[in-house]
Image 1 (spheres, rainbow, N blue to C red):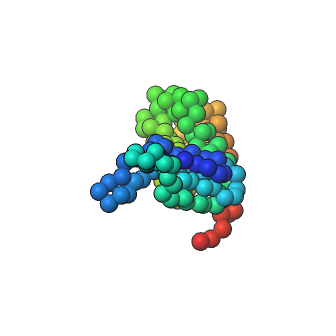
Image 2 (image 1 turned 60 degrees about the vertical axis):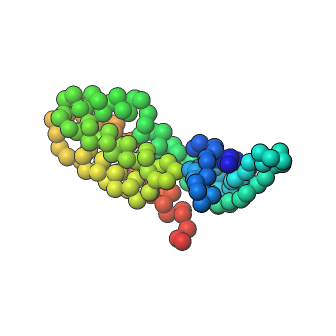
Image 3 (image 1 turned 60 degrees about the horizontal axis):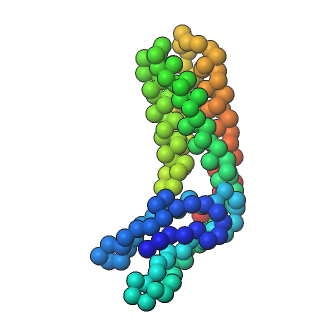
Length: 165
């Protein structure tokens, strides 16, 4: 079967999948960045008749803040930010590695299938690392501190905008 986003923007990961013995197929679906209705169809062309067939239609409501979360993911995976953690690692054993690992946790949690509570935990870890006094390049740490504070503020605002289930 094929998965096709038909409303709301967003994307699917693979776009197609084979069904298992029970007729089940799986896909990751990322909603569009604008709040509102998103629709995904599961469809295929019948190999015998050539008819177009829609097997299922799924809908979900995009919440405010998706664009902010995408920006956070892009920021924590930015080449310049990661290069800075490599420089810190070369001067401060383990610090750059710990920062990069937490940045990756944030990026993973902000993609389809991620758990947003993981973002909070990783940001808390980053804040703790950057808050410890060290003999370091203050400009590098100040920059990463600014990045983490910006991301914490945006993330907290998004989390407050999500209605309770």
